[in-house]
Image 1 (cartoon, rainbow, N blue to C red):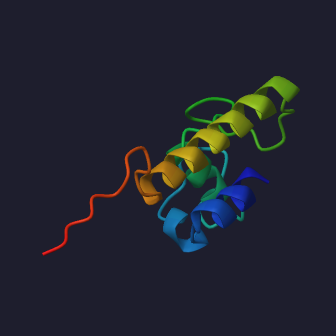
Image 2 (image 1 turned 180 degrees about the vertical axis):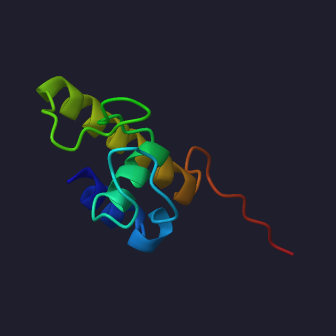
Length: 95
C-alpha cells in the first residue's frame, strides 16, 4: 500500500528497486522484493528488523501512523525542492 502511494507521489519505477533483496525472508524476484526495498530506501519502517521484513507479521496502528508520517515528510520535502521560493518578491531587472 505504501509503495503504491510512493510510486504515485514520487513517480517511482518498480524496476529501480529490484537490484537485490534487502531482507533474508524475501527471495530475489519475489513480488514483495521491490516494494520492501523502496520502503527501506525511504526510511519507512514496517519491517520486523533490518534482516527480516516479516511479510506475514501484523502491523500495528501506531506503525501505520509512523509510516504515513514518513510518507508525508517525503512528499513535503519533495514539494519544497520543486516549488520556487516565494518568501520574497521576485527581482525584476529592466535594462
